[in-house]
Length: 363
Image (cartoon, one colour):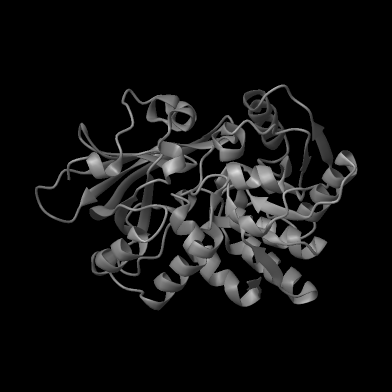
């Protein structure tokens, strides 16, 4: 498949839905990517199985607090600068790039980079959603070294990282993002085509396009979309889809802590007598609770949409008074396995509870 400027609206819309509130606002990256594609023409979206085993692939995206992306605007050459610096460091030319996460702006950065470099984008990503830390990527969980990695900031400064583990890399890359205005572009996890096939969540770019097209063509109140969304997700790597709450945002508080947007929001129900739902946030929506009852938790997906249009809302754009609906979607099978849960379970984020798959939760 060829990815052109005409696909970006659907990709942005679908990836914001899957991003569970994170991944960065897609508006400016979408405009920049469209301009690059006008100059270069479309890029190839390549299925993982079509990658040669000896192909050289790297993951590329933005790292930082999503709120900053609304203020520290990127340029269309930062991804290319980071990509070329990575190739120089590794002494190899990249054959393709891949996404960190199928999330908001981070779904568009690889396309911009690939178009500028004249190489394909792999149809898949390292999360199947958005998650806040590097060690939560499928690549890291599969043991692929995150470094050598290159980072480019807004002033075009390029920094090399070589660390002894992804946990250490996460601390160092987050510190650089904080000292560089809050957002940087990084290239990391150099890997072969054979490794990619074992480590990624496949088909997520094409699914985000399909989801975005559906949302664009079926704008309307969220409850009316539940049945067709359930059918769409049932035939995907995600499975379960629930509408867990509708109501109005009555409180939202976040602050930048350690390079992340951290806080919570409270959503009062439309129906009298329905207790409010609280959502905990760390870049992404991580936990939805009604009192002591868990409605959904990471690594399953929690999505907030505008009640009237069903357009997904990034965490940094969530505001007091918005009328919203909250969906919960099952996570890919990869994240239900013990080695993945060691990195992404609710306890990893400080919640005193174990992960229970969405379909096993009462509602």
